[in-house]
Image 1 (cartoon, rainbow, N blue to C red):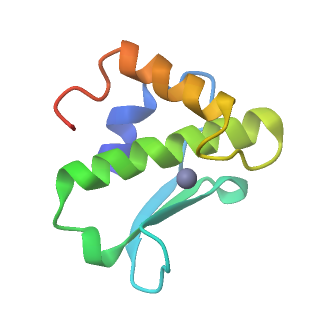
Image 2 (image 1 turned 90 degrees about the horizontal axis):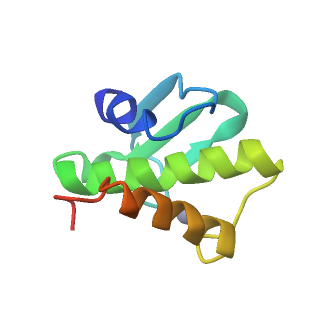
Length: 97
Ligand SMILES: [Zn+2]
């Protein structure tokens, strides 16, 4: 949750994530469940802090776009790319790449 709270400041006016946990049974690195304000990250990645930061940012973008558009947005779509660009220009990715 500390990582989530650190990066949520870059997503003003978006309903906050209320739970974030490492889970064993994921078949992907991470996912967001916007309907219940939850982020899950694969337990196998828990020791890789920078990667977890990156994944949290990725899921916070999905969370924002889901809540804005009412449906999941593609990682490669224009609205997702615009969010990455906005964050990049704010220096949010500094130190992660
Ligand atoms: Zn994604």
